[in-house]
Amino acid sequence: MRVTVDDVTLEVHVEGRADADAAPIVLLHGFPFSRALWDAQVPQLAARARIVRVDLRGMGASQAGDGPYLMESLAGDVAGVLDWLKMERVTLVGHSLGGYVAMAFCRMYGERVARLALVCSRLAADTAAIAAAREALADRIEREDRIDAVLDAYLPKEFALKSLSADPRLLERARTIASENTPRGLAAMLRGMAQRVASDDIAQELTMPVVAIAGALDAVVPIDEAREMTRVFPNARLETMERSGHLPMLEEPERLTRALLDFATG
Image (cartoon, rainbow, N blue to C red):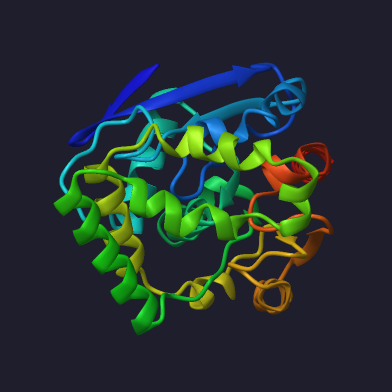
């Protein structure tokens, strides 16, 4: 379905049991992907709860408005979707970029989050070097009017080498999902990520159950950083995907699904 929030129209998919006892589960995808990143998780999750997947603004089939896409603006989009769906409290699940949005949502609408799952995400803001690299990449894809530079920069490092050795098709699956995006949308998202603030301050105030799901072989968010992150929240635990890099929804889909089910519906 299409939901208009403020200045953009967002692609939203709602699946699963409307009569479930568990709170609805909102799945927020990472960069440079779309809601399709969660395809393998949806069938089992939808058997136990209502599932909401949103293409973040400028990503997938959602409209690309003017940027940069600040995390607070993206969190406001999610709140607008939940208002439209008449969902008050949810389990919020964010992968990487989706985790940044989830933390901004908690800062702005914390009373609406029953449980929080951060998948291969972090609390820290970008370093100056990483922020500058994002800005330069945004400039490049706008200048070239192609997203190839983003795919080449991001996708290979997101998988554990063991995952690609076991199934080389995983990289093509990730590229297919990411290829739905446009230079305009990805550039605006890169600039928004570069400008985001750290979330460790709000994490200390969040008392809902939190799980940090980390890839043991993640080269983007190292496992030691994930361990440290769980210490910031008052009520958090770490779940490790032993064979995964940065994309456990593709690398260990069944294991990730079980972890999310246990957390959200247990």
